[in-house]
Each structure stands twice: as C-alpha cells, then as structure tokens.
Length: 113
Image (tube, rainbow, N blue to C red):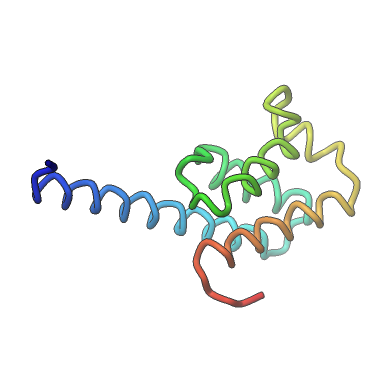
C-alpha cells in the first residue's frame, strides 16, 4: 500500500512535469513568432525549448508525434538540429513549425487550432 503522503508527492511530481512541458511548448510557440526567418525561429524554438524534453515527459497521447518531430529535426539524433534545419526545404520547415503548434494545442487543450 502506498502512503498518502507518497501519493501526494507522486501527484505533485506529475503536475510539475506537465507544467514544465506546457511551459516549454508555450515558449517554443512564442519563438516561432517574430521577425527572424522561419528557419531561424524553428531552430530557436526547438533548441532553446524542446530539445531537452524527453518523450516520456510529454503526455502519452502526444509522445509519438513528439518523437517524430525530434527525429525529423535531428535525423534520429545523428545530426545537430541546426544542420538538419538548414538543409530542410521551406515546406519542411513550415511543416515542422506547424507540428509544434499542433502539439502545443493538444498538450494544453487550448483548442486554438
């Protein structure tokens, strides 16, 4: 049997992780808006906010989408995202940015999209 205080600690930990993930995606979306080129905005959104997230931190229903985004931007972690993003076509960059918006919408449940 799990002690009530342990259950509370586990719940607080889950809440903290969820908040961290939502905050990271919020900041990534903010990075996608601005005066720099879409390519540079995508680079900053991923490197500054999403690259340190683990798929297991993301809600289960979005883990595969997040893993696919990471794979797209790192070529399965074989290349640095700056190199991959630089080599992407404009359509691929736009699609990756769109995926960040979609994940943000799904994770936060904002229904903005």
